[in-house]
Image (tube, rainbow, N blue to C red; front, side):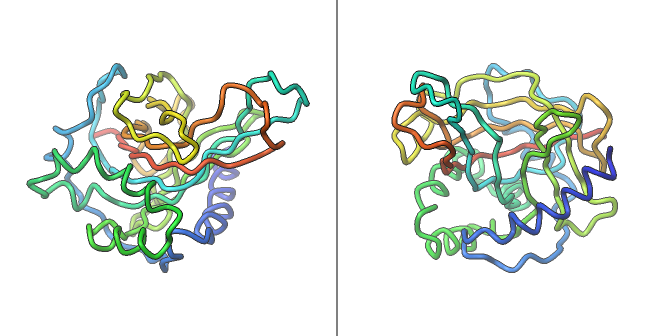
Length: 241
């Protein structure tokens, strides 16, 4: 199963990297910060279970949440096929940033607000030191379950970290969270964990926090059979010490 996941990860990573935003930056391997001890103290608080283990990476996901309406019933609740996102390393820079406490809450909204203007988003990421791509987020059908995958495939590490996780808990985004371009509230915050031992590279837990945009309407009324909603979110990734 892991071999299959890794094969798919490599294939889909190339596809995600080819997305036309932000700015199609060249993807090269690099070494992230090894110790995020300072940043771990600033984990965004919510009703989700408190993190355990060591904070390994903090990345900014910029991409789309993907939805469907295939039943033909306009009163049906939209389905989802998951999400696709490019993951930018923000933890390495934030860890030693004296203003990190105040910046954390603004990163996702800024990214979403610039997502329709590629060059501005690209410049913004570079100006903040967040231009390094750590990997990609996507979903893979595994044993008939649409499974979230976080593949940190550009890190100069062996084995390269890959988290194959399942949702264990969720909570609504704060009312102050940035709404989407469609005017809907931000997607929920999530607690995701590997329950099958299928991950590698020392990671097994992911928190989706500081979300902006990405939400679907309550019903399929007026919607296409499939569509995407742009979003940005932070993923705080943990593993064993």
